[in-house]
Image 1 (cartoon, rainbow over the protein chains, first blue to last red):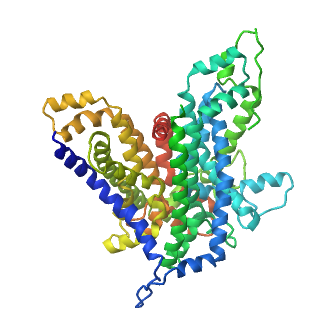
Image 2 (tube, rainbow over the protein chains, first blue to last red):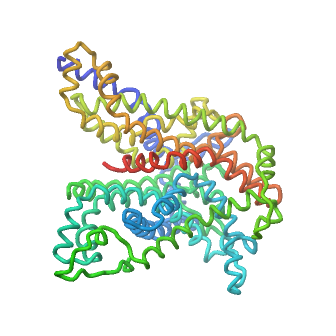
Image 3 (cartoon, each protein chain N blue to C red):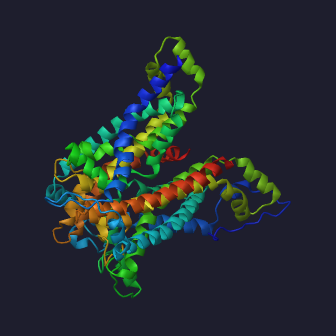
Length: 291
Length: 288
C-alpha cells in the first residue's frame, strides 16, 4: 500500500467514530465553557454575554460549596473503603475458602444491578420503623432513627450504598491480577519462611500497584459521575446534605432550567476530572510498567 | 486491613504451600462469610418482600404464604412491557453501532500509520475521563437542536463512539501477528476484507467481553435517559421504574420491590446463568 493510501485509509476508518466523539464529547466540553460566560435565555430574552458573572454567582452559592464538599467527603469515604474491601474480597475468593462460589456471587451481584434498583432496595432497607435496619437495631432496643432523613446520617448512608455496589466491581480487577501472578513467588517466599502477612505486604501488594491505581482512577470517576441513587433516595436532601456535584448540576439544569449556571457548575466538574486525568497520566502511565 | 493473620512458617518444618497461597484460617472464613451474608442481605430482603403479601413485607414468619401477586400488580400498574421493549431496542442499537464504529477506529489505530494518529488517539482517550454522563447540559442542547429529544436514538447517540471500546479492541488487534495480516493481503484481500476475515474472528473474546460490559452499562444507565426522555414510548426500564416508584401509590413496598426486581430480572438471570463469562468479561475489560 502506498503511503498516501495508508493515510487515507486510516483517516476514513476513524472518521465515523471521531465525528461522534467530537459531536458529543469535545464540542460539548468546549461549548460548555462558552455558554458559561452567557446568561440563560428566558422566553423572549436571548442569552447575553455576562463575562464571569456565573462564576461569581457560583463562588457565592452556599449550596454549590456544600455539594462540592459533600462530593469530596463522599469520595474520601467511599474510595478507600471500597478498594480495601475489594482487595480483601479478592484475596479470599482467590484462595481455597469454603463456599467460594457463593462468596464470589455474593460480592459481585450488586455490580450487575442498576444503581436505581439498588437505590430502591436500600431505600426500603433504611425505611424508619419498617426497614430491616430498624428492625434489626430494634432488637437491641435502639431508638428509631430516620437514616436518610437526618442531616448527620444521610450522606454516610449513601456512602454505604456506593461501597456495597462498587466493592465487588473492583474485586474483579484484583482477582484478575492475583490470578495472573506467578505461583513461584509464593513458593520462593515459603522457602524463605516469610509469613503470609509479610508476603502480602512486601510482594503481593506492590505487585498489585498498577491494579490499585487503575481501580483508584475508576473509583474517582465514579464518585463524581454516578448520582442515580441521590435522585432516587434523597433528592439531595435533607437540606442539601446529600447533594453531590452532578446532582446539583442536574437540579439547576433540568429542574430550574438555568442552563448557563449549570454550564458553569459543569466546568468545575470537568476541571476536577481533568485533574484526575492528569494524575493518571503522571502516575499510572509510569507505574503500569512496574511489572 | 490488619486482620490478615501471620501464620509464621517455621524453618525446617515441611512447607505448607497451599496455606501460603491463600489457604484461609477459620477466622478469615468467618469474616468472609459475614461480609458475604451482609452483601446479599438487602437483596434477600427485597426478594422476601416481593414474593410475599404486603402484610408480611416487613414481618418474617416461616409460614408466610408465597405469592406472585405483587409482580402481577406491578406489571399492570405501569407500561413495563413497553419500557422493556425500549430498553432492549436501546441496548441493541447502541451495541450494534458501537461494534461497527469501535472496530473501524481500533483497526486504524492498531495497524495504520497516518499523520495525527497520536493526537487523535489522545483525543479519543479524553472520553475515558469526561464521559457523556457529565456533559448532560450541553448534550441536551445538542439533542434539542437536532430535534432528537425524547427518542431512543438520543439516549444512545452520545455513547456510540466508545473510547473504552476503541482502547480495548486496539490492544487486542495489536496482539494479532502481522504475518496473518500480510498473508491475507498477499491473497488479495483489501484492508476491510482483512479486518473482517482476520482481525474480527480472532478478537471474538474481546468482543464478547465488551458486549457484556456495554449491555449491562446501558441497561442500567439512568440519569441521561431520565433527562432526555419524556414519554412512555422512549423511556427505558430504569426511568420507567423511577417514574413508577416516585408517583407512589401510598408506599406499597411490596409492589415497588416487585417492580424493582422485575426491571433487573433479565440481567440478573443472564448473570446467574452466565456467571463465569460475566466475571471473565469484566476481568478482561479491566486488564490493560
